[in-house]
Length: 110
Image (cartoon, rainbow, N blue to C red; front, side):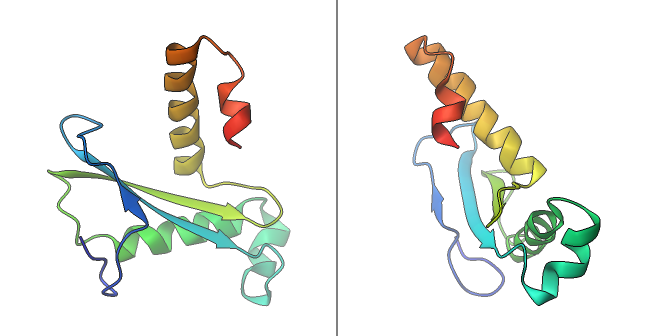
């Protein structure tokens, strides 16, 4: 399960997680104040995370989406998380809440 750059994604589930597909995720942490992101992050909060999201999606296009469900998880050093990552974290929190009856599970993750 390699990306287009020959590296592996960060992790995957062994048990099919979603619609019979294994969950694969790749995590990136970007520096909000890096010169390469500064113009975008000055205009829009979370822009660096969205740029990293798009980059991760491009690198992982080689995955077979019939057998894998890919989640690019991109976070910035000053806090913002990409939209896909937020949905993923919310899903995990919801499932943990169902399993434990603790309504604050999502806040413990982030």
